[in-house]
Length: 544
Image (tube, rainbow, N blue to C red):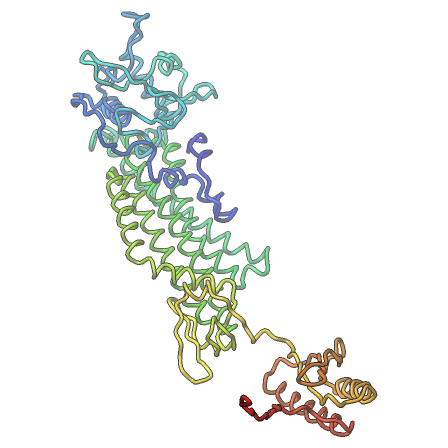
């Protein structure tokens, strides 16, 4: 695969995944514009060229078909004539030499990577009239195969092999070894008989190479799966074994594709046959990427579900299942779009329709999406969990269920209040379940006739009640005389009880309050009672 195409595409799933699937990432990177080859509204429509040279893909396909039918006069029509050379240029010999070089030391990009538009590719940094379609190696030196757009007599564009490409091709190839495994092995009658313009021996060799490549790929993958647990002991445990299995089939497919490309070229399979299978290699690569991500989603989802089930967070399990299905659906759609574009379907209209449909769906399900996002926020931040006693807005109760759309709260009146998750995520939540201790904070009002000596003794005795109790936290534990008012002498008690259980706190609070009442009674004073003084006066009226 060409390095210049690989450099422009990165898929960071895992390091091993990058190394394994990197050759096929250019196909994914073509979304949504598909390398500039998609149909654009308002473009100029040109009359067809009899040789199919209106597009770079048509020129490559036409040249290969003509040259492998030994019609080099027709193949020469795909080569640019240099006006400076005029009659000295032998385009027929050049076409024959180019075919020989492509067969032995050349490579052409898969058809899906070659532009099928009269304008060619506009994003390859080669200029508006140039397209790169492959490379050829001569004397260990590689150079690009470049097509250039010219105007015919009617002013319409035609794509031809550029002058700079043809200049690199020697006309004499006597020193070039053109013998191949097929030519040396298969009988002559299989090499003379042709099917679709290609010797039958090449088609048979293609089938054999496919089978051989797949068997080699399966053997390599099984060897790796066998050796990895020997080297890394934890590889046989979850989730590592799941990740290894997720890579198994995609790696087999990729190795089989690379094996077919390598062994096919080494065996001498015709470039025409290899080009016909080029789109298939891209499709297999896309399928491998989709399978890898699909299986990794399963592994991650299963591991996460088990963790949530151990913590009894059923709402998180529901969210994980929903997200996994949504990601898988998106993955299949993207993979289908790439494959359809690879086989030649115009997916621009479909993508536009999906975009418009997505906008309409988003507008129609705005509240649903809002509630789903709210549920994801609640599950991720976990301000409340099932079983928590909390106050949400003006509602106090126990969380009974956190669903994908709404959360149910059981109030103290034993009623169920359903709060949409979109609204819940924006409300003020006071969660009592996270409380590790309770605040003990009673206020005592004593009679106004309580003396300073009695107050000092009360402060000491009340603080002793706090300090001797084993469940009262000594820091801080205080009793203070804070006010003299209309309601009497005010004493404030401030302490924390070390318990998170409300029932235990109520029991301890009851015990402390009774002891403090005993202390107040023994001190000779008492609590103030609500009182009201009524003054009566007689109105004598006016004196006559």
